[in-house]
Image 1: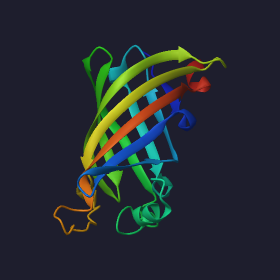
Image 2 (image 1 turned 120 degrees about the vertical axis):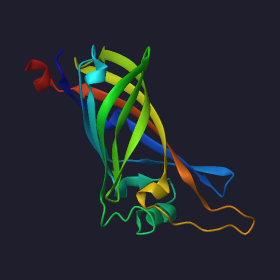
Image 3 (image 1 turned 30 degrees about the vertical axis):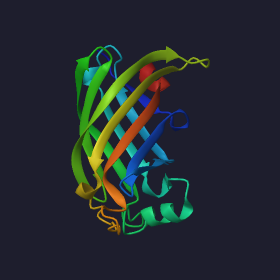
Image 4 (image 1 turned 90 degrees about the horizontal axis):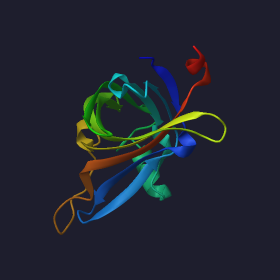
Length: 182
């Protein structure tokens, strides 16, 4: 087994989320700026590790006022907590191309264990001779677990912002040439 470093290709990857708005609708968004690495051997994925850093200020829901509010102290407080971090602690094989990646997610200096349900897309050589690996992952978390408590009660009942946040990742990682040669 030989682990090598694979850099996440942010131009071909995405970190997206959705959360209930006014109980009955969803608002979707993404983090536009992130970087990370995967240490892996495609033949032994349970030995892999992942580390990702997201720029909190890059949150983008397509509405400037909402994004500014999400950057404020009511939510991500990006001046005090500019990064969100994920570091895997283990990878478990579920069945076929399905894996479970368990790790620590840190938001606003609060770290909680999360489990990502991952589908491994495989490895292929791109037109420039680079090896690429592809993954799709999903998870859900409770935003209040990370100190994101702001909300408003609605006149008709319920709250403005749902507590559960659904996260979906599309990741392409490119094997580092130096790592491959080593």
